[in-house]
Image (cartoon, rainbow, N blue to C red):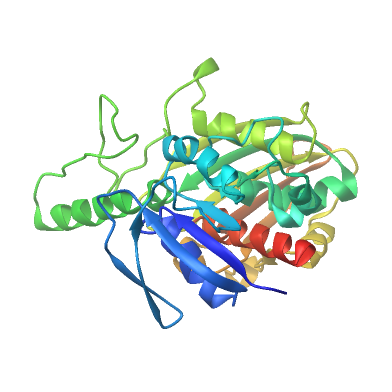
Length: 343
């Protein structure tokens, strides 16, 4: 496999830094690496595989000679710079919501629909982190027995909004322990009229509210999952919640299948599926938890049991590091697939 010239826009953010780390960790075939950011972060030095790189301010010339560019700096930034990257001949793997639902842009999880990667028109979209976790679990079940309906509740870590969310949880926890007032500046949504503390609290809002009283995050899970499976009528009822955890999102997933699937059959099925690891022995209190799944690649599944209220129902508890597989790792895997098929 020949090397590629790679650029990472948003290299100093949580997802961008994780992408850079994974490129080195997974020995991606790099020819050249360019790290890009806003003027505020330009000039910083980042070590990648023992080599030091200086972060450059993004410009129209930044993508000259670049084969593939990871975008991880927000939807507005992606929309601003994607044309420059494509004009320079670079394929963009975008980690924002800017292009996910465009008909001409593949939305890809390699384990779910990797063949879509080669159908790109200059942009490949990375799904929402919660969507990736959900879809990885639904894929083998859907293929095996079909799915009638999904009810999913997410319990999402503060790293979902980046370093600012993590710092807010740290500061508020320290303030709580010291008996000081908890200052809330970022959650549930940066720029919102109201902010609430996350330390020792749970906030039933992620992103702004949209139609029918659902948030944009909830609609992302519905529409992106339907697009990934090419099933626009797949019924999905989501509730997304922010919890005081640093990394790793949790999801309680209720699946009503078309054909019967026992809990043991489900365990065996999911254990064979790529990207998943079954951790399910309630007698030994073995089940996934964010504290133990952070900084790991697999999505962990446990508490697999019957839903006793419907004929073909299952309940599952799922946990995964949303910065890795939920964002950076999925993007790098898309790049690996692309490099392997076109190299």
